[in-house]
Length: 250
Ligand code: SF4
Figure 1 (tube, helix red, strand yellow):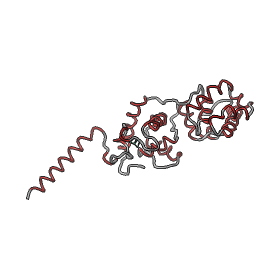
Figure 2 (cartoon, rainbow, N blue to C red; figure 1 turned 90 degrees about the vertical axis):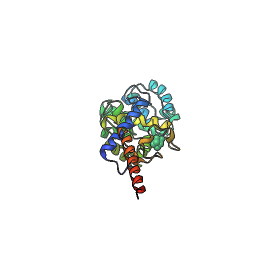
Figure 3 (cartoon, rainbow, N blue to C red; figure 1 turned 120 degrees about the vertical axis):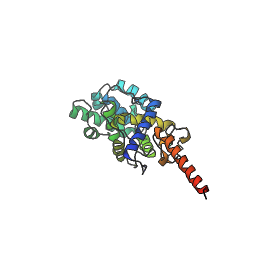
Figure 4 (cartoon, helix red, strand yellow; figure 1 turned 30 degrees about the vertical axis):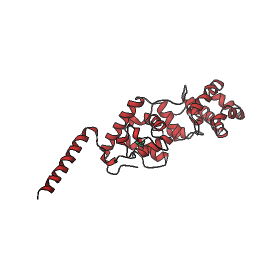
């Protein structure tokens, strides 16, 4: 939900303040939750992470990337054996099929390199915009926004997106966030989503973004940049006193 009365300039000031606080809590570099040593490993770890925790994926890939040392190993592998190797991540039939097909496409069409643009990435089997943007940002440092369930939910709550559709949210965020924030928005928001801004019962009372968030109990229309708050309050109090004084003057 957007804040209807918020101008572009005010939104940018609010976004910068949100990012300042997120950076203060989680550092000013994107965090990496999936362990990988190169682009194709991160790509495959991300395919495995669908409907699975990062901790479980890291446990599986620790052995997987020792057994399958390069893309050709996935191309040549027995599909059933690969399914068994990744079984505990869930949806293993589709994931194994996609990984094998993806490895084949990377070897045959891209000379074993992971491409550097979203169109080519999303043309690979099992790769959507979320995975594609993750590779662009984390491997190639190309500004891109990864929209997962946390980013979708919290960007809407923060009034920086207005849609349940991840692609629409990605484009709305590209419009509202300065480019320098794009890559780390995802991991910062995941960290916030796992601790305070949970899907059910967000802990707004403990949240350090409460005064900047239209979904908190505070009235979003009252948000003002830090330096302006007291002045506004004083002006309001002075105006109120003047009205009261006038009403007493008969
Ligand atoms: S104030 Fe509440 S809804 Fe807003 S970001 Fe914090 S926890 Fe989420």
